[in-house]
Length: 302
Image (cartoon, rainbow, N blue to C red; front, side, top):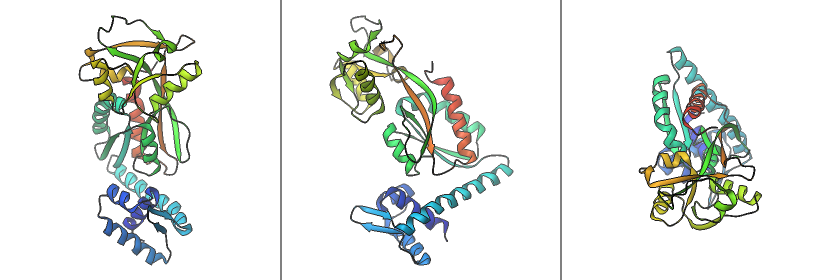
């Protein structure tokens, strides 16, 4: 059994599409289809049920998918252990970060990674938490940092910390920098991302628990565009302090604390997430430890 054919089959099965798998693997779709078909011929089994919208594993395909993940994981483990004999860890690790967290962690993480894991490769993807859960499930990410994560099939989560959410307004907007309540914040015109953005969902849930709901002026799925609109006076936003601090012109904004009914600041929890279907390699475990250490130093943890 050819390992490359096995990897190709697993990617098609996980992504449900030859087209998406070809994009992820960086191969031409006809070549991908040919290799998967050769694997089917060798095993004398149809592994995928092809249809107009993509492909799904057959019963035989599900069985090979379970074995194949383990086989490829053992290959990675072997590479890791052989690399350790050379005095270091090797392999590629794909890490996903929310945009605001990426601004705080990327540079120090890359510096630490190069110093501690010189033989390994790190690929960082910026994306929304909901999208990254899908990428973890499909194997396109090994590790992700997620806002307000919930347990899901095939994903293991662990608390990482939390960040305070602030009301963001144009600098000098009435000169008011005093804290405001969640109810007061709900009455202001807000420029916020659309659902299922994790911060949007968290703010709505906290406001609903307090008996109020946000006043949505605009829905924009770009942090930079949200900040531009706030600066122009189109509304206010609820974002992390780190997001404002890493903006191109942080002095263009003022921030105010938002207090929960109990008087505590509004915060959103952060989690690390890994696939429960693919046990982490030694290199992935080392990267996860780096993420945790740098998050403790750089993020707005209480």
